[in-house]
Amino acid sequence: MKKIELTNEIKIIFDTLNSAGYECFMVGGCVRDFLLNIVPNDVDFTTNATPEEMKKCFKNFNVLHKSSIKQNLFQTI
Image 1: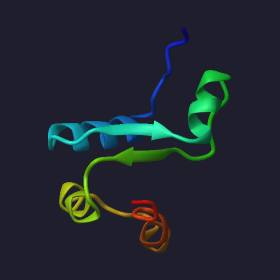
Image 2: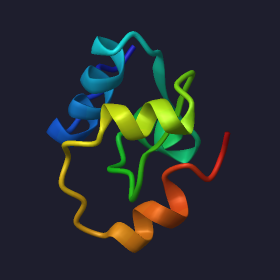
Image 3: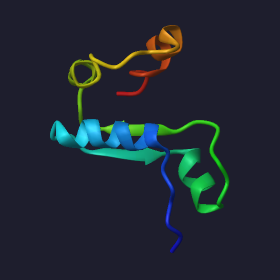
Image 4: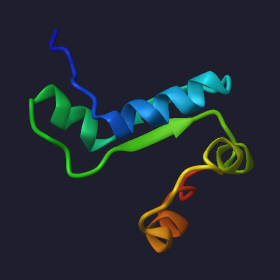
């Protein structure tokens, strides 16, 4: 099995949610891309944290594209 190299940004998301007691998994096309050794264009996550819990977890993070985050961060619950 291939070892998947995660970017620092992805590691931060996993570490932030895991250290707060939540599960976090990569899902969707990024999993396929990693398995095919292709750099994904984007990474989708699923977690057992609610949108409000996620806001608390990431409240101290700077958002570069707030409109994008607003539209996509909590799109799927």
